[in-house]
Length: 89
Image (cartoon, rainbow, N blue to C red; front, side):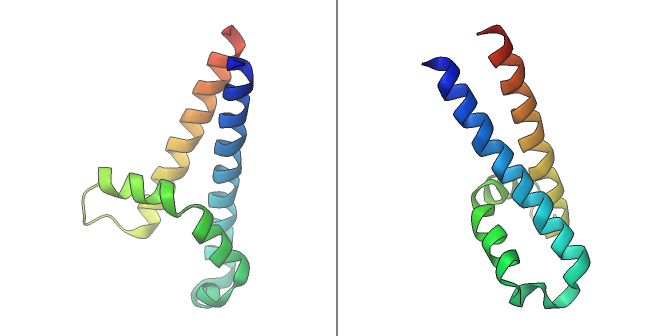
């Protein structure tokens, strides 16, 4: 049971991380027209919760770019931590 829960949490973190990565790529490729891009809007909707959590932990003067990068790093570290835990459960 715990192996399944760890694997499910890892899958969710992986999906969120890949959405943040895709959102970052569209940020670079689409430029200012990214707000009209449906895929960017979907990624924005999916990653809103982790970015909001990180934004509350960072100073208010942090830009959206910094919040996105820190969110990705936090998700990556959590994903790696769950991989380590899964190996020993």
